[in-house]
Image 1 (cartoon, rainbow, N blue to C red):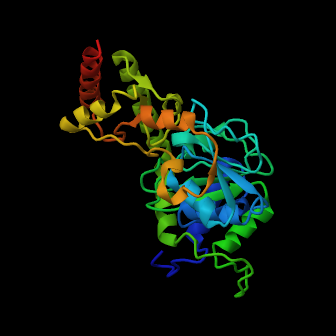
Image 2: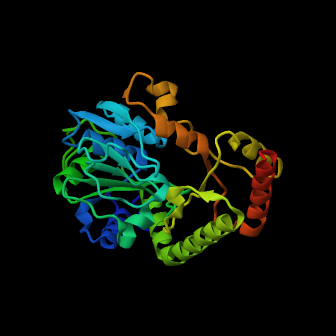
Length: 327
């Protein structure tokens, strides 16, 4: 990068990364558009889509970025509930955004846009089959399975849509033009992120194997100790999350017990977007399942350097204490 003195604006490393990602998905490079981060990828995809003038449904059970992108796009957003397997109940509607929960695979749906932020492995291992009208956004954030420090990409069979997103990422300019023809932003991936992304791709087979091995070990330990694994984490795909299902009435006690023993936990998606102050003006449907999942789902530490024996000894003991207390 320093030798070429090219640091931005569709440089050779960005083009190489788009080409390699496209090859993994079975797409030609022009169908892939890298972005500064996945949140801007979602925003650009929504704002340049044919659904922008319609009411767009987004599940409340998601990370705030999905809903923020929808709101910032100027679209009319409606929050929808999910099923017990964490999937949107509105995914049979083309005017919807489907969220792949915690790196899970894509199932049959009609949603025009797929938020696959943590689902790089599910996507590239053949578990994601996009329809002609659909687009997909994946995150390459440092916390994700394939890290580029920061970044992401948008992918679609619809080349015109990809071109609009690419233009949107470059101030609304078309190739060779200095005129803003779309109300875009500066959301181009820089060469330095592409360099890290390419390095991560070189290591991907090893990283993937390690993540899959760790995931399988976690599942075995949970089964051995009577801990219920949340549906998204039962899928054997490489992703950076591991979630368990707990009794809502015992969840806080479990969290506090684990914290006293040096184990941090996460409510990755909080209480659901419908509970967040920024989204109180959005239309929504009853959120019975979202609220249940928020009260009963807990994220455990999950990274390649962790000691599963030590972690699950603590989790198992804390879980056993709660079971004894309830008897």
